[in-house]
Every structure is written in C-alpha cells, then in structure tokens.
Image 1 (cartoon, rainbow, N blue to C red):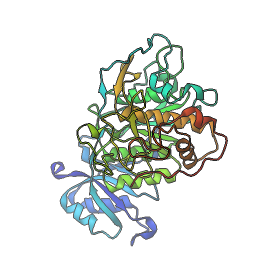
Image 2 (image 1 turned 90 degrees about the horizontal axis):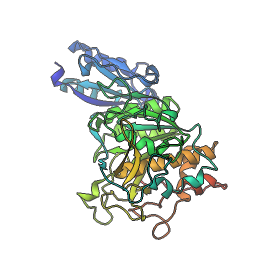
Image 3 (image 1 turned 120 degrees about the vertical axis):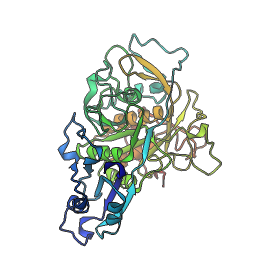
Image 4 (image 1 turned 180 degrees about the vertical axis):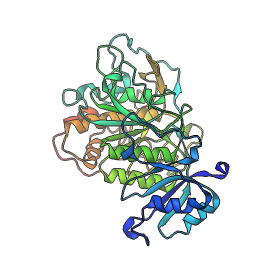
Length: 415
C-alpha cells in the first residue's frame, strides 16, 4: 500500500566499492521492491530538459529520482519498513535515511523604504547600491554567468526578469512548470539579475542568466530530496552559481554529500544563514545557522540593515561566511510590480548576484578562486578578520570585480 511508504534517501557506496560493482543501483532498488509488486519510474537530470518537471503520477510513490553522479550515488524512493530494512542490510548501500522538510527562509513583507525612489523609472534598490554593484558594472554585469535560483520558482513573465530568464525545471510534485506560485523566488531573482531595461528595478548582476529550479511549493515548503535533485540538475546543466534562500534546522547526510559534490564539480553554492535569532537567540560561541548554509562548501550569508548593523532576526554562528543587506529589500513581485521583504533570504541573492559579477570579470577562474576573491575584498564592518555575526564582512561587488591580483586563500566556514 502507498500509505505505508515514505520518502527515503538511499546513498549507495561508490560503484568500485560495492560487492556487486557490476550491478546498477536502480536494479538493486528494484530487486527489493519487486516482491511488493511496486515498479516506480526513475528520472534523472539527463532525462529532464529545460522547462520540464517530474511527471505527476497518479500515486507519488511511483516516481523516484536517481542522482546520476559517480561520486554521489543517491536515490530518492518511497519505501516501507521491510524494504528500508532490506536496503540497510545490503552491502552495496552506505546509508538509508528519512527525507526531511526544508523551507523558504521566512521573509517579512509589506515594509516600506524611506526615501526609496519610484519604480516607475529605473531604480537601483538600496541594497544593490550598498554592495557597491553600480560601481562594478563598468567591469562586469554578469554576462554569460548562469545563476540558478533554487526556490519557489521565478515569475519569468515579469518584465524585469523575462530578458534574463533562460529556462528552468520543477522538482515539486504537481507543479508542471518552474513558474513561481509563492513570490519568494521571484523576489530573490530580481535582486540577483533584474534587467537594466529603463524601468522598474535593477539587480546586482543585470546581465546574468537566470534559471528557475523549483524545489519549494506554493507554501514555501519542500523536501531535501527535491533540493538534492535540483543541485544534481544544476551540475548536469553547467550552472555556475546556485542561490538557496532556504533551510532547516536539520538535514539528511545525503544533502551534505550533494553539496560537497557540487562544489567539487565547480559550482558556487550560496545560502541564507537563517532567521532564527529573533525567536531563538544564539548564546556566545553557539550557532543557529541552518542547513545547507551550515556546510563548509556552502557560503552562508547573514543579514545587515542599511547602516551595516546585523539585523535582530539574522542567524549567527561559526558557519557565517559573509553578510549582505537583508532588511526592507526592494525587488520584483510575483505577477508584476515590486515589493519589499526582509530576511537572510534577501541577503543571500545579493551575494549570488555579486558572485556573478565577479565571475564574469574573472572569466577563467574556478569557484574556489571566486570565493577567495569575494572573501578577500569584503568591507570589514567591525574589527578586521572574521566574526560569527557578519562573517568576513559585507560583500563589495566593485572591489571584487576590479581585483587584478590572485586572491589569498580564505578558509570557508562551516561544519
């Protein structure tokens, strides 16, 4: 019965380390499911082109996802207890774990910005100016850098986003397209790459290519299995930067494995640190940074206000890498128009956008070098060096884009 099945993440050993190294992991899964007469259809990034989605099966448990990466052999499949136990004792399997929920980092809307110019004319939002993006545009505007917004989708019909929208995919069951049905992803996309088109707002990287990777539903909720599939798709489609304004207080081990693989494959992963401090203030030397921002190979972004002071809601801890504006951020709104939102969700796309500007001006750099450039050109807001509130400091697009020397190695924070 479908009712006794639940979404699980099965991480296999690498093929050269399996007792049955000649047997495909999907065949191993099917051999366990066969006695129950269950035969799900498995998809992977190579079979899902731009604009597509996982098919909406009559029963969700009949659809699975196969991460088609040698280094990270993960399968998402719905299993019952007997099947879980069978796979956990299978010598080819490293770990079988529960899928977990993940959420858009709660954004506070309906706010206004004092002295904010009218959006009837071309407007540079205050946060875009605060990270010194306009001064970087003579060096780079993010041309040909591919940025995926892993979120609730993107309103690709919005006049400020349509010029830079390149395509996308949906991993949310029942969502046939990567169109936003919440608004969170559209707001983040505008901060990254709203076009310079004579009206509305301008993003940090106004010529970057935007991709919608829909991994959260219309309530801003999702599963880590959807995000894992989204990152796998980004690897297969040569994305440069993945912006993730999402998180949770716990995550399956497969998520870290996926992030580590993406980093090793050359992607730059940026995530919101979280908004946990408002309700759960962190004691000294502790942490309330959420996953995936907590991981070492993901850049965790905390939120500051217009005076460069950390916001009261922003998570903090030893995993924070850098900070960016996250209070009363003006950007694109679902259905057209513009709105302001607050949260580390809004800080994260500032960093993703400035990473695109930086990468476009250092075309032959790798992700490690781009990170070193970003971290070594920040504006220190307190004492020089790193702290658990603002990380290395506030990102500076102009200084990073104009940098002409090989950057020093800057340690990434995280577990």
